[in-house]
Image 1 (cartoon, rainbow, N blue to C red):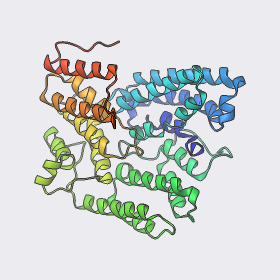
Image 2: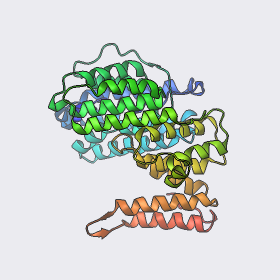
Image 3: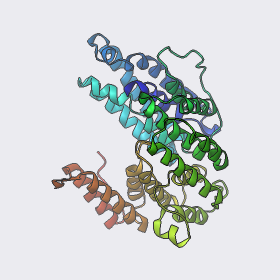
Length: 388
């Protein structure tokens, strides 16, 4: 499926820098630098043969490393210093640096896979909050190897959401073939994100997904997903939502707890479970609240609930930033009670990740990190982490 992901890096570079006039001076400069590197790398990433050809190694390496430097420089952008965006930028920076390092070490196939698998990193960033269409570059001349799905991804990446949605709609409604299953499923998920995060319009979503139920040759699993999403959008219509621009900290925390905490949800007669729509719009509101209300007392708990929500969202849908949220909660607020809760959630995930039929086998560096985080909490931040 690598051909489907040709342009995912464009998603990463452009998608994350699209909200607020605060970035009007620095962000376009960063984006153009990103774009120039991606424009070059794209012609090699479409072909394993071209990407692995020794005669192209020097040029690819130079551009990968330039791209990595641009990703690092993006961390100084004022928009990406906000609590919600900085995690995506941090993951992006590490990912691109590792891609360049792996390439330089000679593992070109894996490096190309990494280059073409960064879609979910960007999805975790650029779909955090509602946004209007803002196409930053003129892309009317698409290369011949762009499929309709790739064009849709490209348009979404450049924040031409409405045109992207129209293309996703076309992909979903065409006569389904076996090879199209992946694209159709992804197009449906993009539409869920479009109506949950970008449009925040459950009424329009219900109409759209009711039509999708009539598409021929959809699998039973996909039809069940559509029915489930329709039900979730209907529940959203009955839900008491909140304006993140005017809500108080108390209101925003109650909003998060009643939708993301199973005990609180039950006590407040709220549904709880694998509810993709609820987690998308709830976490989107939390993201926007962090963006519009920096340096809050509620920030550490909001980070905790973002991590919980991120765990509930299909990891193939977004790149999971849950671990970063939890570690930020612990390292920045070790003297608060919520830090213990964040640590517990983080430790649980680490143990689960390294558990198998042979039992739990935590690597040494993971054990050391857990011990350091625990010590940080026990001393309420007196003993700092060793930052190497």
